[in-house]
Length: 89
Image (cartoon, rainbow, N blue to C red; front, side):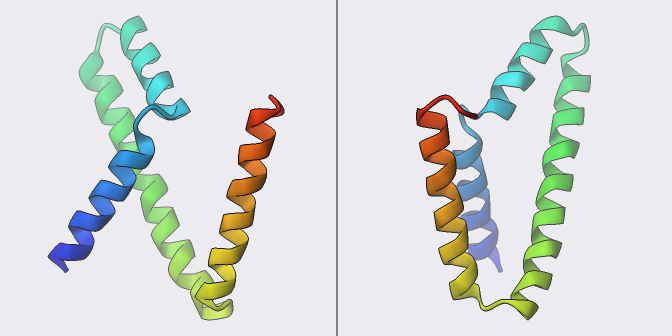
């Protein structure tokens, strides 16, 4: 279990570095008098987002094979990447 905790931590930590959410959180912190409030709110949002991901992911794998989910997820990431490159997102 410790291995999956460490792996999950690093995957989420690396994925979140420099993304739009982190940039928005930095901007909010510059405008707020309570950086602790910004931190707590952002941390709770990330925890809830991850909780939803875990529950939805565990439910979906009962309906759809994980191999198909990986293919669809990869395709969606490619589409988002192309749309980002062309300024559509």
